[in-house]
Amino acid sequence: MKKFNSVVLSVALGSALSTSAVAGPLLINQLGFTPESEKLAIVPGSDANELEVRDLNGKTVLKMDAPMVYDWEYSGEEVQTYDFSAVKTPGTYRLYRGGEYLGNPIVIGDCVYEELTKGAIKWFYYQRASMPIEAQYGGKWVRAAGHPDDQVIVYGTDARTAPGYEKAVGKKHPKAGQNVMINSSKGWYDAGDYGKYIVNSGITVFTLLEMYEDFPTYMDTLSWNIPRELKNYPALLEEVKYNLDWMLTMQDVDGGVYHKVTTLMFGASVMPELDGAPRYAIIKNVTATLDFAAVMAQASVIYKKADAAYAETCLKAAEKAYAWAKKYPKAFYKQPSDVQTGEYMHGGEDGKDEFRWAAAELYRAKVAYGAGKDKAAAGYLADLKKNKFTPDGAWWGNVNMLAAFRVAKDAATFGADLNKAAKKVVMDEANNLRAVGDTSGYHLPAFPWSWNWGSNSAMANNAMVLLHAYYLTGDKSYVDGAQQVLDYLLGKNPMEISYVTGFGYRSARFPHHRPSEGDLVDDPVPGMLVGGPHLGKQDINLDGKELWKCPNYAAADKPALAYIDNRCSYATNEVAINWNAPLAYISGALQAVYLGNKAASVK
Ligand code: G3I
Ligand code: 9MR
Image 1 (tube, protein in one colour):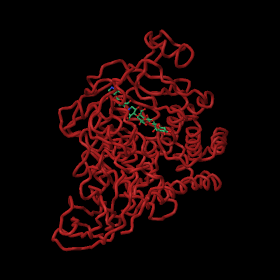
Image 2 (spheres, protein in one colour):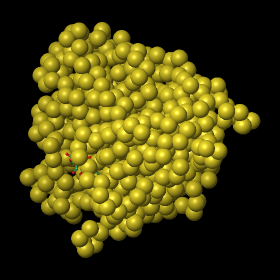
Image 3 (tube, protein in one colour):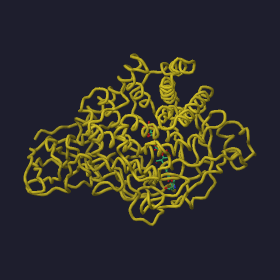
Image 4 (cartoon, protein in one colour):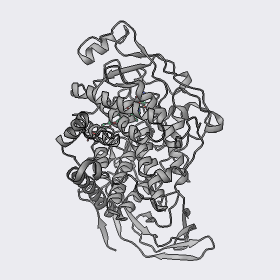
């Protein structure tokens, strides 16, 4: 039996493997496949049996010989990949190995990812602050309104936080002692906590608006049950506006944008209406301001048709934010010592990727408004040309790829040279991902650094790169790569779990998500992508410190196995808006592409 060893690094397998995979006999996308998708099933081990695909009448429609055996360094397993892509007729099928029925039925259907796409977007409604979730829209996950946030204290202006501000910023707040309040209502809770964060809103809003920009016709065919208050607004744009409205409240009169609205510490796992500690708008900074500028510029183009006045407001806010950032390019966020909520700031931050992204979105917007020749536009274009694109995977801390997506799809606006440079970055990253995916055990396009906190979102963002490579080349092998990511998230993984709550025959049930923990409903709020496996183990007691303890997964020594479906595991089982957005995007894009839609944003 030819053994394919995909390991570039030598992996000491030995007896060190203290956590065996919990996989069953068949690891597969638990939702199924569209007729034209690549269809792979993973069988752990190397016994190389023949597999049969049978229809519900028991008729064998395909026999698959023993495939290559792969080592998968991220789980330390030997696995076999069976390819039944030749089965295309919609229907329900079963896989057999030597007469043994393996696992659960497999569905092939024309719209098999539609409910997932709608469910992943609907989840943003469940995350809305400052309003109740009503039974007619939210079903059994009803809840009272939490956090009106109409009296948010500007951090550093009240006696309690003035010292923290002065220490973090190096000077007194100009309004210290005045207890300044702002109305910072609406917006989405970030994740399992009740904070609202601008940096994380940036990549999230980009991804959802890009979904609409890439597939407007398909998205307009979808509807999901949320309150509809705005005429002419497509459902997705109405949902995103709920967060854009909040983001606009975070811009100070000078154009700078506050980092977040949170309590000083993470609160208890209670329903939002019971989380009553004071909330603060915390410290303006350059990365939040640039992420704000980028998405407001993007919104100014996308909302123009539905609401020209609102779109104009967004563009003005974007330009004002960019001007503030140009004035304070080194004003990076420094978490004050009395603030323990999410930082959304990382060590290597230099602001270059945020400047590049904001400049690209602003230049595109100015051209769209017929002002591509004015002084401000010339400034954005000059800034865009200053730094080279770099082939980095997109995450909240590196938004360079978002700029590359924008420029790579729009030669008409950016010209041949910039377009070529951006396309090269997208294609280089996509080809690296495809090369890894094609030669690895689970066919997962993942790099070693994909296994950080929120690894499932890293995989979904990798799939977005692959989909963009398809938009730019028409080569379906990139769609196959993105399919492998969706399959992984929906069950083709060593944990044999669908990482999306409520989707799949064995899905995550105990996410770190305060409303799911605090309500009296057994089932978690549906449509949430949990963070996924990673070896950081920040949520378990490693050295006796009083860290939040989490049982069982402490022994995991392979990244793809370091996961536990347990409420305490915020490092592997939380949910977050920047994780759900790429899930919605890739599910919707794969569905739209199968139905014959082309990416409308490629010009
Ligand atoms: O970038 C470095 C990389 O260079 C290094 O190799 C790697 C391994 O050490 O770490 C990488 O930095 C990690 C960073 O995420 C980027 O992946 C940090 O270790 C890791 O601690 C950091 O985790 C973040 C986590 O908050 C803790 O700060 C997650 O990205 C981020 O998604 C998560 O966000 C939280 C919010 O703060 C609060 N709301 C919930 C949300 C989701 O858990
Ligand atoms: O619930 C918080 C989650 O949103 C954050 O991602 C995580 C890491 O910053 O922190 C969680 O809050 C925990 C705190 O860090 C430690 N005490 C228990 C809190 C609830 O899990």
